[in-house]
Every structure is written in C-alpha cells, then in structure tokens.
Length: 481
Ligand SMILES: [Zn+2]
Image 1 (cartoon, helix red, strand yellow):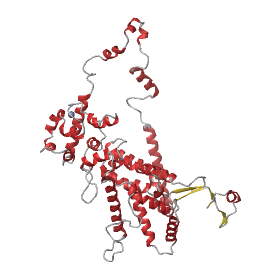
Image 2 (cartoon, rainbow, N blue to C red):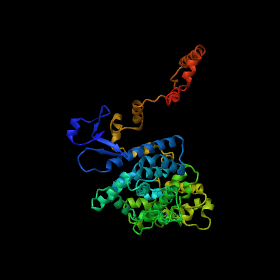
Image 3 (tube, rainbow, N blue to C red):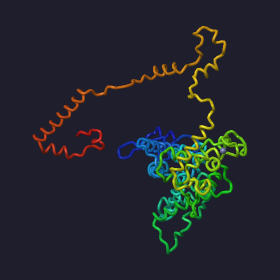
Image 4 (cartoon, helix red, strand yellow):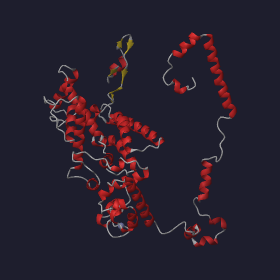
C-alpha cells in the first residue's frame, strides 16, 4: 500500500511487488488513527469521534442485554462496562489521548457517565465527577494516563538500538527544539494538566530501581493505576476552588476514606428494586424537585427558596429528610432510620438502605400530593363543568353545529389514531397453520430418512461427511443437522 498525496504517484501507478500492483490510497487507519490526505492541519478529532462511535455501540449492546434480562445491578454493570466498553474506547489511547482538547475529553467521558446516571435517572446537568463518585468509578482519563505512562516506561526499558526506543528519543529531541505538535510535547502538556511531572512519574511509593523491592510488571501496574486514581480524587475533591454543587456533594454525601479512595455508597451495593435506588440516587446527586434545586434553575436567591409545604425555612435535602414538620407522621413509622437524632449523612448511610428508599419514596409522594393544585378531577364533578367554564357564553345562542370548538377532541384524536395505526385486538391467528407445521415436520423426517439410507449404502463417505467440521455458526443457523 502506498500512502502519498502527490498526484504524480497517484496517476503514475508504477509500483509493483510480487507480480501485483501496489495499491495507492488516500487514507488508511493505523492504531485507531485515520490518516488522510485531506488538506489542513492534522488533528485527533476524527480519532475521538471514531472511538466514541465504538464506545457507544458497545454500550448500546450492553444496555440492551441488561434491559432484556431486567438486570440493573450497579456493580456488575460497572464491571461489564470495564470489560466491554472501556477497551473499545481506549484502544491505542497512547497515540491519540495526549492530543485531545478539553471538550473532546468530556465527550469521551460521556458514555460512562450516561451508563452510571441511568442507574438512578440523574439529570443531565449533574457534574460528571458527582455521577462517577456514585459508583466510585475512575474516569477514562485515568485509564489513558495509565496506558501512556506504561508505554513510556516500557520503551525506556528497551535496549537502545530498538526502533521504538530511538523513535521516543527522536520525539524527545524534537520536543526540546520547541515544536508544540510533537507527541512528546503534547504528552508533557497533558501530564502537566493532570498534575504529573514527566521526570517523576508514578508509582510514587516505590522506587523501581530499589534493590530490595522487586515488583513484577503486573504488581507495578496495579500500584500505578491506584496512584493515578488517588491523585485524581485528591485533585478533584480536595481543591479549594470548586463549584457549589461539588462542594455541597462533598460536604453532605461523598465518603473519602483515609487512604484517599472514594467509598462506594451503600445503596449501590444493596440489592433493591430500581425505584428505591432511583429515589436515593436522585436525592444524593440533587436531581430532585425540591425548592433548593428548582430555585437554582429559576435564579431565586438561595435564602428565598423556602419550603412550600411548611413555609418555615429553606427547602434543601436536610430539611426535606430530617426536619420538615409535614412528614413527621411518616418519620414516626420509620423508627430504625431516625433513632437517636441522626444527621442527614447518617440517615443516607444507614444500614437498611431499602428502608431508606421506601421512606424517601413515601415522603416524595406525600409532598407531591400536598403541592398538587386543589382542583380534584375525580371527586365526582362532571368534567363538562370545567370545559363549560372556558366556552364563551354567546356560543349557546349559535346553532348546535357551531358548539364544537375548533381543535381536536379526545374522541376525534382516538379515531384518527386508530385509523393511522390499525391494531387488531383479541385472538390473532398463528402465522403458521397446523398443516404447514405438519408439512415442515414431514420434510424434516424425509431428510433424516435419506441420510440414514445413505449411511447404510456407503458408510465411509457418510462418516467422512460427519467428520468434516461445519463452517463456524453453521449449527446455529441449521439447528436440525
Ligand atoms: Zn418544610
């Protein structure tokens, strides 16, 4: 294959090898990167798009299978994601990851965030870091950093006469000359943005040159991955400059252990119905409809987001769960949750998470019923009383045909829908009738008989046929043979 942009090569077509002509192409894919002869500066955008397409395809397959099996267990879904989707997305990340922009990175992170967010139907506006913290899952960037550091260390360990080692050295030299688009420069800038120093790469706790501790490559990889994940957590959650949502989540919900890792919340490890998990998760990530959240969207000052149920104080998660007097009766029935005046954090971390989910669902539905408009449609009043209210008085004087208001009535809509999408109700005759099924069975029987008689006539040929392996998938497509 020849990859060349000059028209002289394309039109000349004079290269031959082994008796055949060598193909001249305008684009080819190597290590996941599509190289084309298109004009303009080379960018990694197309790679990011390609990886995203692969990732979403794998994720769709995963979600479909889980949906078919009614399977929503978070931890296992996380493992499935790590096995099926992450490798598809992170293929050859060493090559393209350092060259991506911040926007492209956030697109790369999105499939994982969507998968986790779907577990509790979080809103789209919830920051990615909060969503990932719910499952204690490291971002894709950590995986890409890990791959790149492994790659650099592996090449450094190679003998100096190897081509890859020389290529790395060449890239370092070009980078030292000040070229911004060199791979090594991009890696250094990218490492810098994640707080890593090229001269002092993790694993931090172990000196790889120490004569006393010898780590195998596998052990070193484990330590390296943990170091990167720890570093990311401390950069995200221990920084003084963070948004109000992140700091609220950090103060109220996230549990960062002494060794620097995020503890996965208890409800993610508990077997419970999906609706309960949604109730707990939405409260944790602020995907609810409490005043503190709706007021944010409506730009109401924080102090004025007063609880509409008791009108005493600001309605935030703590007021809703622990204090609002409207739900005192319900709290009384959940003694185990509220024994000993617990804080919001203690309640959310209580041992019986199913109980917590049921409580949250109950106070939510109670709140909805209290805040619903007082017009009750099902209290026996005729609906016409409502509609009559909106029909102008003068309509009564007009002839009966003019009484029908313009627009579509419910009945008309149903009729037109039925006309658009005819739907047969009741018994549906089977596609295959009894005599057709009998015919298929007889046909199959005849084929079996034929094979048996062949076997009797020429056993050697029949055995040879039986021993020849069928093409792959043949047994699935032809189950009777
Ligand atoms: Zn209240």
